[in-house]
Length: 258
Image 1 (cartoon, rainbow, N blue to C red):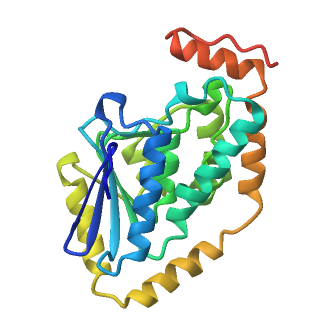
Image 2: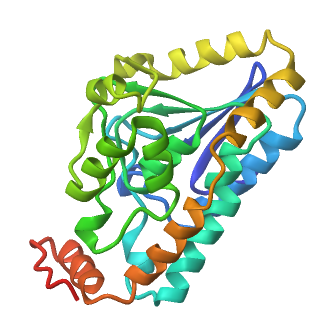
């Protein structure tokens, strides 16, 4: 794989993926999503790979969201297509992968970053990490599975609170509500994720794959399609235009509900 936005390496049957856009807080732009899709395919089709760890470069961010400037002028149809392609090529592809994916959350996991972590099968967070879905502050809703996977992980009440307040939570609170599996010092995030996969490597690969498929199958419903449709509709609102303008200009938003 030849990547510009990722650093990838296979060591002892584990594929390590580092999103390498530190200056942009590892935000997910189109190019990065395309490279992630390629890496997921590589993991699924390469016998040498028994598991995958995804992390972000630097100490500040895992992934601090999507690259908002790339879709700031999208229409509703373009927004819906953005979500649909993201689901198909990256987020659902991770959840439905034949190999276990672990998110090593080394810092901020916000918006699309938290959605990426939730698509993974296991999450290990640094003590300093903050996790949240701030999309409503931009006039949007989570569009990469956030409304569905957060609800599955933490329950309806807490998911609604996190999504409609847009307030992030600490790693320790995330562990308490079941959003992450482990909280460790930042220096130990990769080591803990590797430790988990080293156990998995001792188990029967076909059985591991079957177990992943069976568990994910228990969660299948129409919610992802509903989310994708509503995500696209948000792009047609005046509130979305205001939210993005406020974000770009670093000022408070003034939403009118239109």
